Image 1 (cartoon, rainbow, N blue to C red):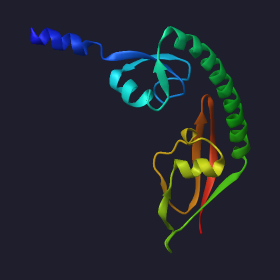
Image 2 (image 1 turned 60 degrees about the vertical axis):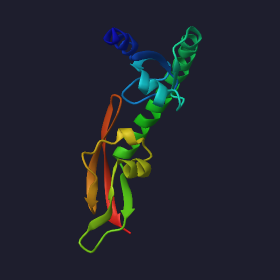
Image 3 (image 1 turned 60 degrees about the horizontal axis):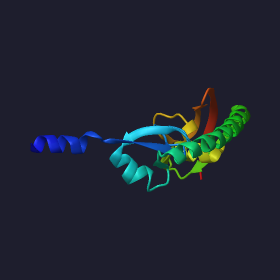
Image 4 (image 1 turned 45 degrees about the vertical axis):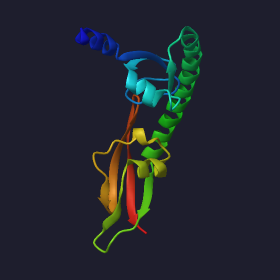
Length: 155
């Protein structure tokens, strides 16, 4: 008897939500997604990233999705232009280093993104750079791929 009650109580571990903003590894703004109860109630809804998928929320989702698509198209165009401009230039990053050329603080994707004026998601590096020198960094956003040259110099 107890097992039946417990099973009914925990069977519906998912709920449908409408995303208000783009959420990495989940979906774009305006889309309806099935997520676990805990993820929705403890993260998505309190951080205003999603709301419950009611009839009115689904109607609003269409408008949100349209605006988000327009914003993404503009952002994609700007990033593609930025990538083509950066392909011809060298991005310089200055960090403190010792006499042997080793950095005290590694250069990671966040540092490169700030210096290049790109989003951190576009930078594709395996591990942070810990030495001075010139490096080619692969960059991708959507269907646009490219490489930028970064120069890490001592302060």
